[in-house]
Image 1 (cartoon, one colour):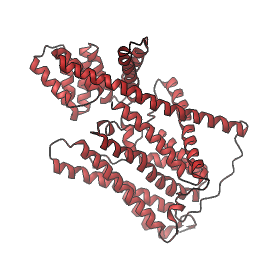
Image 2: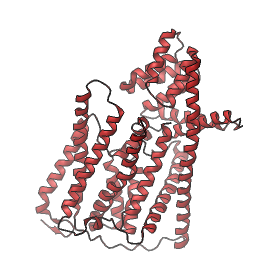
Image 3: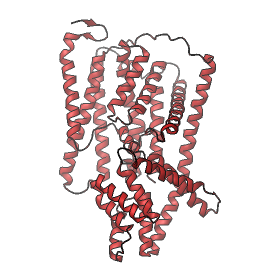
Image 4: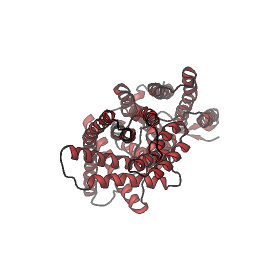
Length: 481
C-alpha cells in the first residue's frame, strides 16, 4: 500500500476506514428508522423554508401590521397593506401549485380563504392539510367546520373555538376572531383584536430592527465588493496557490470526526425520543421537553466530537486549540471586521442570485433557516434564551471548530484552496441532510471556508456564522408573533 504524508500508511489506516464506514452506515440506518430525525439545530430552520411559505408569511404579517397600525393612528397608507397581503397569498398559492404541496401553505390558505368568505375553498385546503399532517387533523377539521356554510349550534361553535384556542399564533387569532364573530361573543372578540393590535406594533418594531440590520449588512457587503473591484482594477489577481496547511492530523482523522458526529446525533435522537415517550405515554409531550431533548442532543454531539478531536491531537500539538484556528493573528477588531464584511458580501451575492432566480422562475430557493417548529412554539423567554444561546453562540463555536478548523485543515493538506473550499462547503451542506437547501447551505459553508483560508483564524467565520444564525433567528421570532 502506498504512503502519503498527509494520509499516512493506507494499509495501517484500513481498520479505521472500515470503522468510519460502519459508523456512517449505522448513523444513516438509525436516522431512517427514528421517528425523530437527527439534525443539527440549525438544520431545523430549513424545514418551513423548504415549504416556500416564509416569504408569504413576512408579506402578510407586514401588510396586516401596517393596516392595523395605520387604522389606529389614522394614517393613510393607500393600497400598500392590501398589496402586501395579496403577495403573501400569492406565495402560498404558488407553493400549493408546486410538485409537492405542503400542509403549511394549505393551512394558511384555508384560514385566509375562510376569513374572506370562501367556505368551499377553505374547506378544501384545510381538509388537504389534515390529510398531509394527521397529527394536527383535529385542529384543521375544527377550522374547516368554523368556516363551513353549514349552520352550527352555539355549543358546537364554542367547542370548535376551544379546540382552536389550544394553539397560539397569528393564524389562530384570525380563526378565533371569525369564530367569536359568529358567536357574537363581544368580550372574547375584543380580547383577540387587542392581542392582534399588540402583535401588529411588536411586528413593525421587530421588522424595523431586522430590516435595518440586514440592510446595513447588505450595504457593507456591496461597499466591500466595490472596494475590492477598485483595488483589483476590475481584474482578478493572478491566482497563487497557498501553501498547504501544516496541521498534525490527516484527512482520515477528519472523516472519523464527522462520522462520530453523525453517529452520536443519530443515536441520541433514536434513544431520547422513545425514552421520553415511555415517560409521558400517549399524552402530548410538553414543548419544554422537546426543547430539552434538542439541547441535550446537540451538547452530547458537540462534546463527544470535540473530545475525539482533542484525543487525536493529544501528543501531536502542545496547543491544540491554537492549531485548530482559535488564534488572533491580526488583532481581534480586524478579524471581527473581516467576518462582518464577509457575511455582507455573501448576503449581497445571495440576494442578487435569488432576485435573478425569482425573475426567471417565479420562485426562489429556501434562503433562510427557519425554526418555527421549535422557536415559534417556545413557551417562554427562558426557552427562547436557551435556543438563542444554542443556535447563535454554541453552534458557531462548535461547528466552526469541527468543519473549518479540523475538516478544512485536513482538506488543505491534500488540496488547493479552491478545491478545499468547494468540498468543505459541500460536506457542511451534506451533514445537514437537506437536499432542498443543499446549495444555500453549501454557499454558506464555502464562505466560512474562504474566511478561514484568508485569515487562518476561526474568529471571522464564527462572527459570520453567528450573524447569519442571529439574523434568521430574529426573522423566525417575528414569524412567531
